[in-house]
Image 1: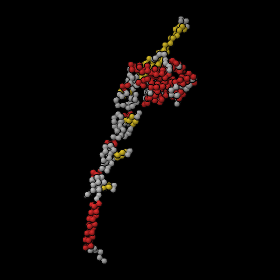
Image 2: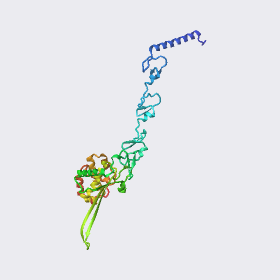
Image 3: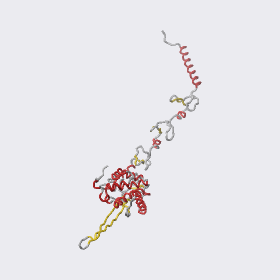
Image 4: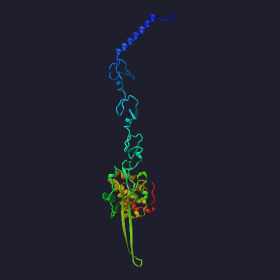
Length: 348
């Protein structure tokens, strides 16, 4: 049997194939392929993607996603973060938090006191007032550092301090109903005048802002036989407060120190023989009353959270025993409590 195909049949097959292709082309032209973007009928070459046809690259590009920052069509590589698209690092960086000092976009954020810093600036120096890192500031003579933002409102001289000191005395009288007969002398000092252990307690800035000094000098007159004829006492008092405090800090500190004076006059047993946490706790309690009365929120928080020995535990003891605003209960406690039975130190 001959396997060769007759030339006439071969030519007929070729003609049939060409005819079919021609008819298919006519059919496609007749049906029309429309661009999925502009709607025009496509002739010639065209693009397909995702089952859709496009007459040009421009029409296809219109279907691409855009950068969420600059709006540019994402025709090449791009990346996403938290559901957002970015065409470049530059656009992504615009969404990042920035260091409040140097302005550098941060992929690693350091939060201090609700403020944002880069790792370098988070290491300080720190302002002793606002307790935040700063770029512009200076160091005081006693070693404290101040930023230029905080400095203008701080108290450095006694002309500005004296009215605040008098106001603090009035505040203590308002919350306790008591007042010492004399007003101790005010002196603005640096940290070097504070007890050595209270000058700077690490990175929490828990320094002692003030101190009450009371000296009693007793003069005795005797005759030639050594018999006492008379005796007199002279009392000198002073309140030492750090310079470079804000007005609310100054008043709260002065209220604490003036309560020491009040206790020495009105409750000498507490001032002379009670454990330190009792006197410091009562003074902090009165200072907290003044802070609440004047909405000194930051200072009140410092008192509430203080970690200073005697100050923090002492205040929280009286707050627990008497409540937030109950000076009469504190007075009742001081009058009725056997101070000799109290522990020397108060744990929490």
